[in-house]
Length: 304
Ligand code: ADP
Image 1 (tube, protein in one colour):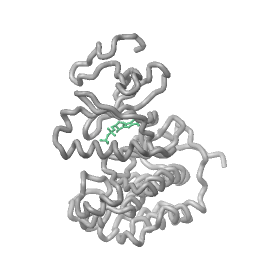
Image 2: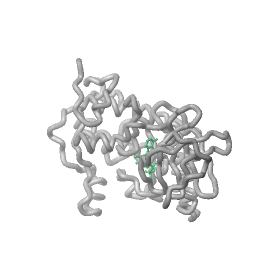
Image 3: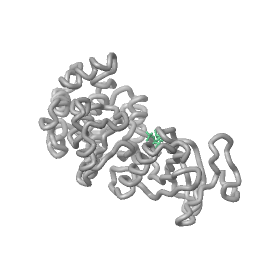
Image 4: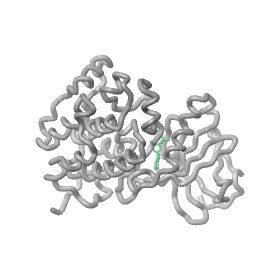
């Protein structure tokens, strides 16, 4: 690290990526760091702007992986939607460019990975923490919905955490504009994690389907298990259609009630995002202003 080499002078065998990356539009030089993770189409690496020292997460999609028109379209749509967004609870999209080998998306770096990583280490989260995370997720989601965007794949692994434990909604790979969702009715595009009853019934994914996913997320964060675990796919679909899931008896009545409201089989019966924030789960319970990063791996102690 830190050695100055000519751009593209050092290629790592196998992935054909150079140690330096130059943005042809701005001339900015980025130095490659560790691999952050692999995605559906490419990889995400930590990169440092060589002149400012600012760190980014750069998503790199090889052109060879999106040779099919359909997958190219998906990546292009993700860029088209994400590049215009700017909100404190949505992963920042800095720039994008392409060369013969890859497409590059320069994103805000979230050093504490995702809420899926947190839940894996913690098994379950406390209600104050869940309120803390959900308030931020709802703020980001309100912004997306106001922009006419349905995320369609809300899940813990798409909620990224910055070094200050701020939540950022990311991965707009399955997101769509509302009017497109209408035209594409019936098409389940990709495989969202939490399928809403109307999505299974091929009636299309609406804003209210994102609300359903919030119910699944709340349940999963508090119990450590998904409300609709896959045993037999048809049986799971039946449970989803009926909104039938194991009652989490050890949760507070407030949490159980909110889960029930969010997981209403009929989309029109689910609360709006504003109504979720007015639910007694939020209004009656304590929400911390900040979370320490040790909450990623152990139960935080709140000074009330
Ligand atoms: P996919 O969209 O297929 O889920 P991504 O390419 O978006 O995958 O992300 C792959 C992995 O890279 C993620 O699981 C995550 O661990 C990491 N990652 C993605 N975006 C960021 C980011 N902004 N900051 C830090 N890590 C990230």
